[in-house]
Amino acid sequence: MYDKWEVDNASEAQINYIKNLMKSKDKYTLRVNLDNLCKGKASNLIQALLYDTEEKLVCEKILKNKPTPMTKEEFMKKLEERTKKKLASSKKYPKGRYKIIGNLHLWRWIDFQDKTGAQIIDYDTTGNIIHSITYEFLNELDCSILKEYGLSAERINNNSLKR
Image 1 (cartoon, rainbow, N blue to C red):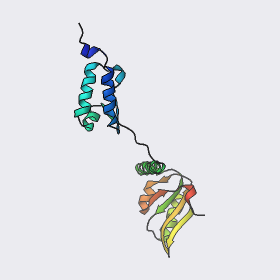
Image 2: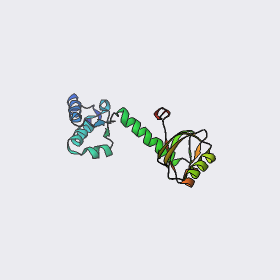
Image 3: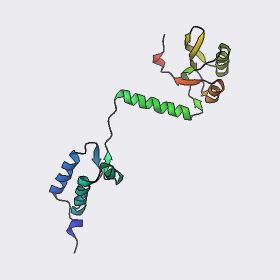
């Protein structure tokens, strides 16, 4: 003889009650498949949804967080952060345009340009002080060169430059 509590499918009333309980947990989705739920497990699930914290239900893999949609601005910011992190962990920057920022004497800027083989695209100055120079690098930029000169680099979108 078998125990109906552990074998029989959950009743329609139990399933509807679970669905109603989930309506109050709008930040979460249920990981449990309600189609294959037996009466005993449905009863335990109802008790957990009623009395346990959402954090506990997530830890026990009963609930999972719903993904939140991102705006285009949030996506672009996250992508930029990921790219910066990837560049920071890499030994070389890929070829392209970079705003190189630092505090160098004019001759050191020229040495840097000669060493990297880059072409000047734009620059930012105040009087005779150079704040940054935007270069086009035709080859990868080695991070050790930036460290050698005490400079930092920001990747530039080709469409954002002044003409």
